[in-house]
Amino acid sequence: MKLQLTTDKFRFAILCTLLCFLLTTVVYAQEEPPLNLNKPEREQWFTDLGFGMFIHWSMDVQLGMVISHSMVGASGEYLDRYINELPKTFNPVDFDAKKWVSAAKLAGMKYLVFTTKHHNGYCMFKTKTTDFGIMTSPYGKDITKMFVDACREAGIAVGLYFSPDDFYFLHQQGTLISRVRNEALASSNPELNVYVKEQMRELMTQYGKIDIVFLDGMEQFAKTELAKVCWEINPDVVVTRGAINTPEQETPESPIPSPWEACYTLGDQWQYRPTNENYKTAKDAILKLIEIRAKGGNLLLNFGPDALGNFPPEQLGILNEISLWMFINQEAFNQTIPNKIIREDNIWFLTTKDRKTAYLFIDEDEWRHGERKAFTIKAFNATDKSQIAVLGHNGKVLEYNKDANPAPNVKQTSNGMEISVTRSQRIYNDRKWNNPVVVKVTEVDVNE
Image 1 (cartoon, rainbow, N blue to C red):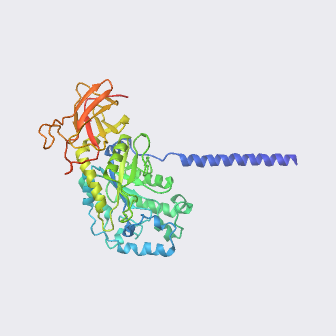
Image 2: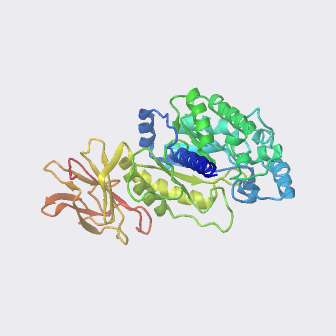
Image 3: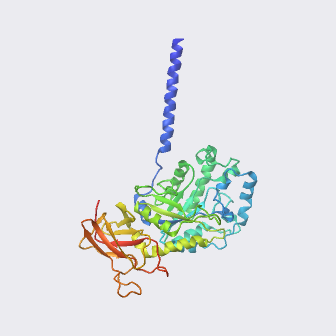
């Protein structure tokens, strides 16, 4: 009897040890970093792009709803109408890829990422895998091809978003639509796994070389498997989500090693919402771009076209103001890198790659036209060769004031590098301009 008890305890101990091992293995597997086969030089190329436009668009934009997610938990009657009726009326006759790309380029965006297929499974590209897509809609044209062609013509990097989560496929398969059940995930659904890989191959082979791929979805397994397909077909492609850090609707508190990309909506929702929407101001977006670049990341800012393929006036207005600011200050983002000290008070920093020129982004409220302000910077030292300029202004003329001297100046003091600048360029008719002023100082010494 004593021997039996001892044997049972021994077996129990072995089982506990095995269980602990398995649990530890599972946790470790979940915490493993994603596979990243991006080439280092291509990741540097991506980081240098800095600013991109995200476009969320699918056939359910006709109802101004959240893209795809209304299918989760939906009734059978709802799904029937969603799958069989909505596609029959999706006809974006105003779609013009060149207009999208032109608007992005004017705003200083150097890459675009387009939703070729979101979680609902509706394909915005030509595919042999399903009839649930744009080619069987009243529109009947390959929107992804037109998007890719327009980007290439404008010299803009091409990015494709793709999700391995596919609610339409699950519904046709007879699987309950879910984001968390195992049978809804590609790792536990072999048919879905094969299906999405074939779609990924189509996207990577039908349109020439793709520059950037953004892989969304619930599980890292599926994203890794799809990333392997991408790298196999095009070793130069940069996989963002699925391989690198892509925080959504948030920015890290402190700099993290590049590459990384922060994804933000312009409003509350990714896809166009005609009512009850709350848009960021242009200044909000500009300040996010400055902060993210100062921390070494890229900003991917999302816009949502309407059912006809137009950017709504509210979005275009904000984009236009961003374009105006970038038209003045684009230089500060060309081939610049974060400084070790990223900011002092309301001033953010970037430097050229040789660390000899500093760009100072001054976010100063209530700065009147023609008003001079002085700032002391400790992150840099001025030298005898240092020159200073306010981007966009020649430093010689203040309109209608012939006696004014708007010239900026810089000098080194015991307290730090002292700059004195005037907001002298007339941007709006009322001379009010609350967006950051960017100052360039050359031949500086960087304080570590």
